[in-house]
Image (tube, rainbow, N blue to C red; front, top):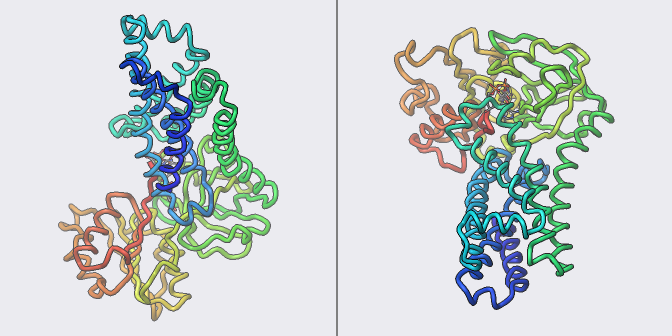
Length: 430
Ligand SMILES: Cc1cc2nc3c(=O)[nH]c(=O)nc-3n(C[C@H](O)[C@H](O)[C@H](O)COP(=O)(O)OP(=O)(O)OC[C@H]3O[C@@H](n4cnc5c(N)ncnc54)[C@H](O)[C@@H]3O)c2cc1C
């Protein structure tokens, strides 16, 4: 991916070089404007890359993993915002030097002379709002739905800035090949997103007719939702994977939520086990039988084929027990020796515990209680080694809230498990 982005940036730099008159470098103002144009072009390429990273392209997601794609998407976002700042300031300062005006005067002249710059200015303001809403401090204060709503406006911002690029950019006006390449870049990006995030889930709904088949309360704060559809096995879901699930019911329509399979998928049924965390997950227990469902996926790489050793340790925290339950069954069926450590705040919250029977190749270790009640952290190296003495010889799969995943990874690393034998799924993409 990195090489594809670098190649695209080099290509853009080459046609910027070709499209920029040599005289532009003759004055400080001209040189600054030219550099500002280049930063604008590179920012645009990176925005397309950002969108493609989260377009849910199945083969891409399977080879990299959605958590890493989302994290690349985020880090590119910071670069894009910085490049846009340089682009805007560079244009103002460059024209200020060329025309001998104040910065404010230079901005007014630019707005009057450059086609569609007003739209671009509005688009840029939206970009900044989106960037700001994703900054850690503000992100924590916003609900997921508000953050998502603000994020969604970025599509409008891209359209607004695109117009000024093709109508005013010196590299496009009068250069048909460059213009065509730009349309192809944006068109392909838009089509990929539309196909995988809108058309495919709807088409799938029409052909599979996925609906809620049953809703079952599993433990305090945990509910399983069974889905049924015709020919669901065509999706080829695997234990340990997740779907983005959108229930077509009031209160659930606006966002698709990631939920993992909590049973090895069979025939036309899938099961998800949902822990009540916020407004959406708490409302899942009120879903009615027959509610239509849109599915994107399956996604995720936390599958049995990643285990290199015959011995495996699975550590689940909170709602992480769903994928761990499915994965444990799959691993045992394929001949692995499995230990499951199930961490929960209280014994009543040990959802699906009854689904781990005593079996020759499966050991279930429930660890209930808050740290202050227990008087120690059961996931620190010494405690974990006490629970699973042969941890060093096992592949370790961890699924739960990010902080718990970090603790377990640090512990098993300290106990000598190599990085390549550790597989994680954090229950958060934010
Ligand atoms: C790969 C993956 C697999 C998951 N599997 C399960 C599972 O099997 N069972 C389960 O109970 N939970 C699972 N989760 C977590 C689940 O998606 C969130 O708990 C749920 O979306 C919370 O939504 P809410 O509106 O109830 O809570 P909110 O209070 O709105 O959100 C709580 C947190 O959940 C995250 N979140 C909320 N909405 C979304 C969304 N649409 N997309 C991504 N993240 C979101 C954000 O980090 C947010 O800060 C999984 C998460 C991920 C990333």
